[in-house]
Figure (spheres, rainbow, N blue to C red):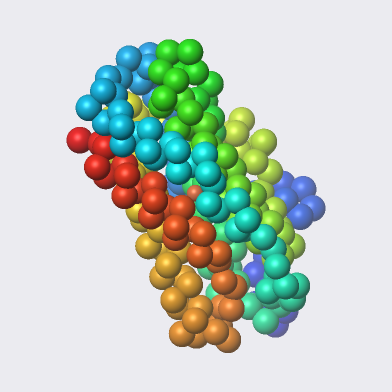
Amino acid sequence: MVDSLRKPEFEELRPGVKKPSEDTILTPRFYTTDFEEMAQMDLSVNEEELKALIAEFRVDYNRHHFVRNEQFQQSWDHIDGDTRRLFVEFLERSCTAEFSGFLLYKELSRKLKNRNPLLAEGFLLMSRDEARHAGFLNKSLSDFNLSLDLGFLTSSKKYTYFKPKFILYATYLSEKIGYWRYITIIDTSKRIPKKISIRFSTSLRTGAKTRTATVTSSMP
Ligand SMILES: [Fe+2]
C-alpha cells in the first residue's frame, strides 16, 4: 500500500503505454480547419515578415537542442506520490499538445503546398519543430516507464474545427503560453532543485520566442 502511494499507478493501453487521459475542457485538443479558406488567404500585407520568419525556421537554430545529455542519465524514482502523478500528467498534456500542433501543421503544409507555398513552408517547418518537441517529451515520459501511443491518439481523438483565423490566433496563444509555462518550470526547478531537477532545454524559449514575436506582427 505504501508503494502504491509513493508510485501512483496509471491505466495502460498495453504494458508501458499510458492510456490517454479522458478529454476535458482542459486537455489538449486536436484541430482541423477550412483548408480552402487558408489556401486563399492573402498574405501580401505580411509577406516580407513571413519570408523573414521562414528564413529563420530554415536555419533551425534549435537543431542541436533537445539532446538527452548526461542530465538524463539518472533515475527519477525520487519523484513520487502526487508530484510524480502531476509530472506525468504534465508530460502527457505537453506531449499531446505538441503532437496536436505537428498533425495540424503537417496537414496544412500538405494541403497548401501548391496553393499557398509560403504558408505551406512555414507550417512544414513548424511541424518539424512540434514533432521534435513531442518526441522529446515522450522520451521524458519513458523515464517514468510510460509512453504515449501517438498513432493511437491520431486515430482516436476527436478533432475540433476552428476557422483559419482562429487557428492562427490559437497557434500564437499556445506558443506564447507554452513558452511561459516551460520557463516557469525551469525557474521553479532552479529554485527547488531537489523537488524537480529536470531541465528543459532553453531552446524551448528561443524557439517559441522567435516564432511568437514574428507572428504577433504578422497576424492582425
Ligand atoms: Fe512546440
